[in-house]
Length: 601
Ligand SMILES: [Zn+2]
Image 1 (tube, protein in one colour):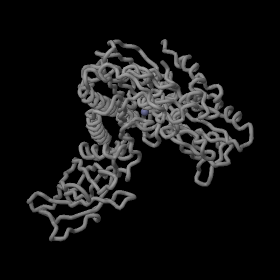
Image 2 (image 1 turned 45 degrees about the vertical axis):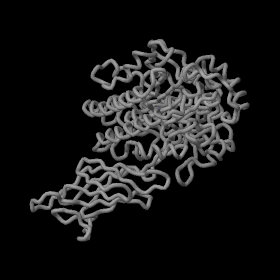
Image 3 (image 1 turned 60 degrees about the horizontal axis):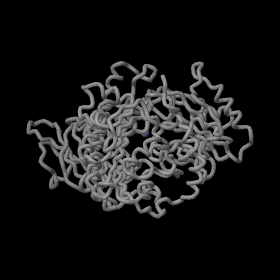
Image 4 (image 1 turned 90 degrees about the vertical axis):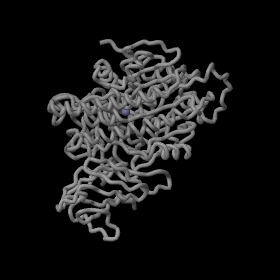
């Protein structure tokens, strides 16, 4: 099988120039905007990333007429350019890959070398998320604004509004952890209390109430159990929902209901569900969803989203409804709600007049694939039936993405350009490895009282999915890295090394990872294994709870992303693959601007 070169030499040549440039432009948003003649008709471009869409899997669905009924991916492939696979950088991780495709540069130029990295601004062995770490290369939103274009952002990784260079003209940002996490609550008989006669709603058995708190907050929701049948029996069948804010409503078993709470910082709520309700109230299962609100800038934009789209519904809950739960179909219901919310939010963004470039991100396929990609008999609890049931959830999520894309496509003008990509695909995983435990057993990692790597440890492994960066403690004794490399090279599971590559930082140019942010030693897993943060004494290897993974070296086709481009001047064509580092320049061309400063052309 012939594959496109994994690392174009032109990127290698651009590195020294880019380092110079990054030294020269510390605050790109402050660079004076160059006066440019307005291009013929105002050109607009939309770039959408559907996290986790695997190009190879999408292609299989595209040729099956029973799949992807909205037909948006098919229409784009027919009228524009379609590459079956967009090759991500190494490692194929969300932060790394998104920053590569919006800068046109590899991790060694962007500085985003993993989803979790050593934070050199703080003492050893503190870390920083790859989503929050400084980006050394210019991004599409910076390049567009520098050239007089207006940019809107809907949740794009890297554009989080935390600094001028990470801010667009207006944006909805990823809200992060919910105010209170979702929780499946078992309500026992004793939790239902009598309701005062004066406030009792109509019920043929005495109404009874319970209060469910949102953990860690002063907020709660009151539920009143009602019996709506005049049959002389105690058979409660409905709940009256009394939220702190917003309308009351009733719910029966199987119903979702929104609960809002007063929120000074914007509309705040949770989507909840009645999973079961015993007719005598001896047992009820109520899912209290994650308490959430939208975030972004400016405030008026977030208020418009609140009013016209609703409160942020939260991400699907793998703890309550994941692969090991009894209710995986509820995960899909939550996914559908999130996609519907995001689609309506994206349509509101598209309807604004003040943008030339719009960046849109949706997470649904990644979330479902991580949880349910049970496709390999080596995975725990694999059966053909379970695999078929779970794969259906994955494929239905691809269909949800297709439906969302269809709505977005229809909202565009014929003269607009539309680019669709993803950050990586997904592969089956079955085992997890703790590099820190392997190194601890060899005496090369030391733990503190909380079982975290201690400040005096000779080494620290910083794992993220398929990659671990191993950093040397500058205060440690010499020789630890050599020993670590020997230990890891000798490590075996069932007689085989689980490692794909063990590379010193100075030798990592082939991986595009020869960056000061990288570990002194870079360890990449073979597909099937992920690295865990857990450090359990005597257990360097464990079984995975979830099923899909990524973050490996970029040579495995099932972990490649996808790419579509359509619009004026883009003739219909199909390619086997492109490099994700080519995307920034393609979008810039459609917009009529120079690409980001470090971008591959
Ligand atoms: Zn991702």
